[in-house]
Image 1 (spheres, rainbow, N blue to C red):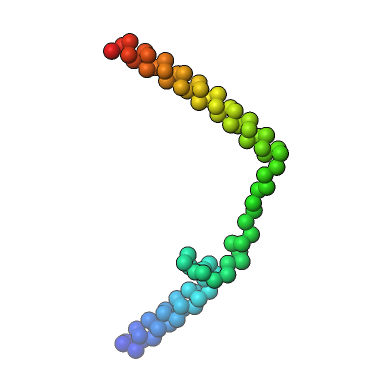
Image 2: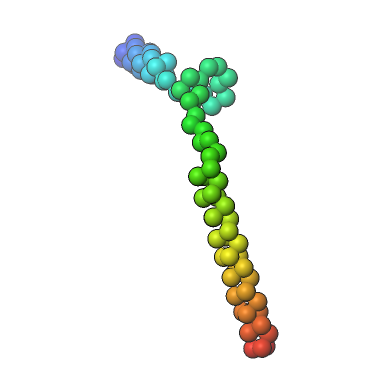
Length: 82
């Protein structure tokens, strides 16, 4: 019985090692070549994107001004209630 249990443990250990050896993803701290991670899409800054960004910034300025205005009103109303 002892021989069989040792044999089963050795077989399970070798199967688990072969499964770990076939793992394709490198460890997080691995410093070797990572060809699959080198292809990063970088967006170029063009005139269309610049106009969209300018428009968004302008809209956010209006939104911030509106929020400040509403906050001032709310603070005035709270001061009147007290």
